[in-house]
Amino acid sequence: MVRAKRADFNQIAKTYGIDPVIARIMVNRGVPQEEMGNYLRPSIDQLHEGTLLPDATKAAAIIREAIANGKQIRVIGDYDIDGICSTYILTEGIRRRGGVVDYAIPHRIEDGYGVNPQMIRQAVDDGVELVITCDNGISAFEAMEEAKQLGLAVIITDHHQLHYEEVDGERQYVMPPALAVVNPHRPDSTYPYPQICGAVVAWKLIFVLYAQMGIDAQEAMEFLEEAAFATVGDIMPLQDENRAIVKLGLEQMAGTRNVGLHALIQRSGIDPATLSAYHIGFVLGPCFNATGRLDTADLALELLRETDAKAAIRRAEELIRLNEERKQMTEDGLAMALDVIEAEHLAEDDVLVVYVPSLHESLNGIVAGRLKERFYRPTFVLSDGAECVKGSGRSIEGYVMNEKLEACSQYLLYYGGHPMAAGLSMKKEEIAAFRAALNADANLDEATLTPKIYIDVPMPLSYISMNLVHQLDALEPFGNANEKPCFADKNLVVERVYPIGKEKQYRKLSLRMDNGRRMDGLYFGDGAELDAFLQDHDRLMITYYPSINVFRDTESLQVTITHYQ
Image (cartoon, rainbow, N blue to C red):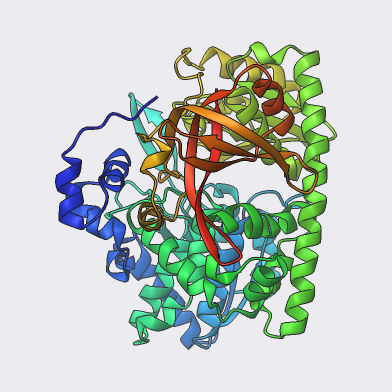
């Protein structure tokens, strides 16, 4: 599919001093012309005021009073990237202002998601006087009732959707009882851009707290890199202030003063000068998530809090080791899930519900994501937990997963999440009914279930220049809702093919254009499959992204091929 949004690309290019191709990509991303300057040059001025978050001012005042009176504060986070970064921001932000604060992160297996009644009772037993949740709490009705009964003060900070009840055809949103509920999705919220992660909610609360205490906002800006890390790791849309947070956060992270984060970047073999959203999403972030999946997320939090360089390297290496173990377990789990799909003929369903009893429950979401990519269907993967069946879902565009779960809530013990991802728990005997109900209510037509490749610009390789590639850098960071641009060319002659990669599994192609010029194309898909294709075809149509290759101080243009036919 070629994106066909119309605009005067030449005039936009002239206004902003850019190539018309760059103008077209911004139009394709839905960037209003009056906002293109901000898009090209993200700045601190694009961040929204934390006081616009509902209850943020009230919550900050409660925390300020607790600090002043030496009250014991406990931050209760979550075991994923967002929860870990949220917990770090709140605990460190309060500690630096003299607060008596500790933290607790639920154990994925023993505690499940979010704050629970047992954690509330433990806080009371430990003499805690104020609990602050982060990246969770908006669904913790039972735990909040327990806190209310025990007289424990609680502030909820969260970014997940509120639960609602249908009353006379209208949604009535409900929140757990707490002294303050800081959540941009509250129906009474005036926050301009609600699609922020839990760590950004926590970070904005620290801004409000510091302002009330007369502390320079620059002190709160030190947590920018953790907010950026979580924004990418939690797959938030890279639009509006999220784009500025990630762009500026990556710049700050490249020279980070956080000893633990520096060690993880170093031991992962990443050049800080080239640090990108890709590295957070696919290299560093998975190391954080692996701790919560296979051990305890405390390991990642302790890395962020580490101040000794040698100890930080040891901690970083442990995270990398856990992630390698997680990768192998994922491959094994994927194979088991595919066996179940084949045995039970599930590939015929519009919504996949795959029950793999022995799969480690922490890997449900990853395997669901892999299956979603393979079958292009909304996918739930379930496995046996300690007391019930646990599950995670990953969705496709056009299927709002959290709302579909709401409609099937009678089969579930717990559920929550986003339009594109969700978590749940249920009794084993409800699986068949749950699968049937989801498919009966799927409302997915063939067009929605057909994966699409969106081409931004059909552009011959001959148009690519060093200047254009450098201008493309201004469009980063790439990610959710700001995808890497996709270009296409056709009728390219393949002159030579070279195996590349440690196991010679990838391919480097010498491509000849119509004007006789040649350019290298790199393909990181199945090299053997491409070889078989090229036995019958000597010309290709490709989608690609251009880059600059540097070899022995010599620069040359090349493209990375994403699809071919």
